[in-house]
Image (cartoon, rainbow, N blue to C red; front, side, top):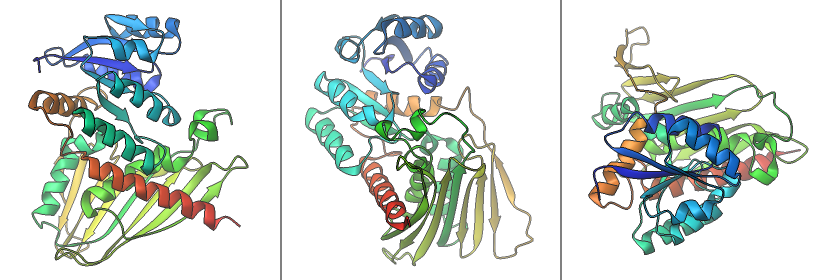
Length: 333
């Protein structure tokens, strides 16, 4: 694999623009090759704004570009599966915006296709590549807070957009669990693995889209680890704290604003009044450079998946999301 990786971006919306701006911060590693959109005019405008060499009015044309080594899929959730299929059949490695698809069976198919074709594929769960989150993983693994007993993670905001917005549109896989709940679920998976039990509750709209939901996750003892619990919450109805709290038998770890965390608070021991140690985090741009660099590292090393966001974690998290959504539906009066 060449030193500079050729990037293509599928989709020309807001998140694609943020990622493109961060790619531009890595000129020695990333080459901005092409953008593809269903609107040729939108693709041309995006390419001009972000410095991409070419623009295409279809996803198939983007996938066929010989200079594109990897495609970042930044379209709506409901489009991920079909767009990924087009790119994989064209021999392109993929970074797919979270959630990777709208269900675990579809995610399983995409991973199988990538495996069969010898192509790299990664879910764009960029928080898992953040250095401060990785430092938290190392601290827990080193036993700095003892054995984990409970994790609490939440993410939510009061959305006041129209009912036609993708977040509220069932045809575009709208809802809080898939769009926001994916972050708390992936964080709990990072520290505890896949839960044995999932009990979900929440509110749904008349269109059957979840707008506020919580779930209690249960973990049986395994591999020398005691039983544990986790609570995850997401909302499109209220401004919730973007917070991760990990409670151990001998300490506590807290990360506020875990999307782009400024710091990590580590409290060792069982004294509630003990002053925590504060570890500071920094990131360039919007925080997506770490994710992009991990993708490019894997491509140069010939790896099909990243150890930071491995396929088994993507599938486990997708299964948990499926169970959470099912629980919300069952819990409705």
